[in-house]
Length: 94
Image (cartoon, rainbow, N blue to C red; front, top):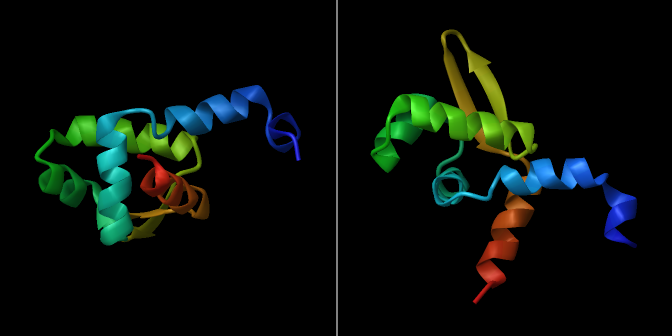
């Protein structure tokens, strides 16, 4: 199957932008090991500002890489199947 048949070029761009940053890769790796983290937990684990983590999660969400589960005031984040496939791909890079 041709890549252009799977997604539009804009959709592919959004997916790639969702993981095209070292912090987003760190978040992918973190959520791969510890799913269901809140934004505070992600920011704390990576020692980054809450607002920075929030923007990265927003971009990852736009790329279909994270899903959110609301529990009261807390929002838990987990990887989508697409993000897990990207992690597998990244693991194969040398």
